[in-house]
Image (cartoon, rainbow, N blue to C red; front, side, top):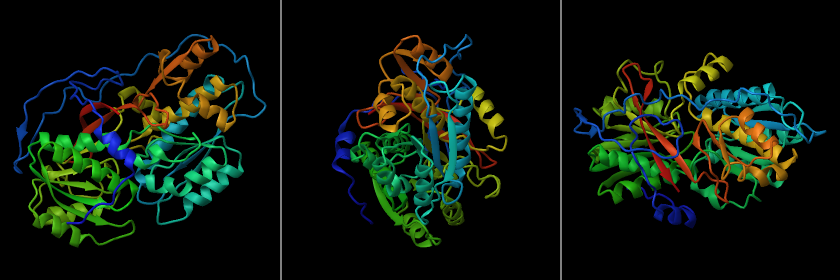
Length: 451
């Protein structure tokens, strides 16, 4: 059995915290008080019986938006707020780029349609992050900093963010990731400039580990990407599954850039686990056929946010039917999807679009609250606009309250957003999805937790 590396001590502290998790009857659209439900489970051929999908999951509507006049900002700026994005258009997470970029662009559009920030339109500059096999992220970051951005949204990959976080925060610029989930960032020396709308994998790991146990799995094998994201998530899946009485019977690592996975697949299958967790990026395109070719049923497979994608063009129909996976954040709601599709009609996935949209809004609102577009000033207001005020869920509504002298509590498309002192969400949803016959996935249920 391959042992996983230890993660920072902060992880142990977080794992020890009680994370309240409840199955939801329907998608709650970010409501902060979930309700529990029970449903009949349908047994499958693999002997795993997961809870039935929640009725109406993913079909919720978002809160009403502001329709009245928006007051003019009492403070104007000579320097417009400029936001960069460092999101993947190439590399092993390229499938996450389109929804994240669409979320950023939708946020920018709505902000500028409402008159911008401090009297000026917000500017956005997009750059590719690539992945850890290249130096694209460093080059892109250098270019963005050279263009005077106050904040950079990205990267999606925790491993990529580790290569640029010191460069960004060292320049006095906010790094705001919509998708980083490695627990390592909680204790990073980031000068208060690193923030994220995606919850730490302490939560996703607990949800996935508990869910596999709920489905009746007593033993689990794992195939894990050997980077900050993969090993951190695997550690928390393992802790939760073992705490639920299960046993991890195989843990096989691979490295970014590897193209052969037969050894890992053979070792995991040889352990005869009830379920297999694939903690990978797009390497799942190669791993899944190896597994199904050796008799592993789709219903035994559990995927994660790094590989939850549209596989309709990659596999034969039915290949993934019944496989399930987790993505941090609440389900993308129908009206939000329509707005995103107006920005990018080619969208197939919506993963982390809400987190990207929320990042833009939070930065803009913090800039209004700070009456400044300087990165360090904006960062100092990010926690304040996420808690202990009048609730609002879009820029027009929130900025109207701010300009009328009100304190605000932004709750967004990704769910409730309340930051810790470390810039982490303190509560979040994790969605559970099930693959259909066409190898696309559908919202099944979501779980809520506090960190």
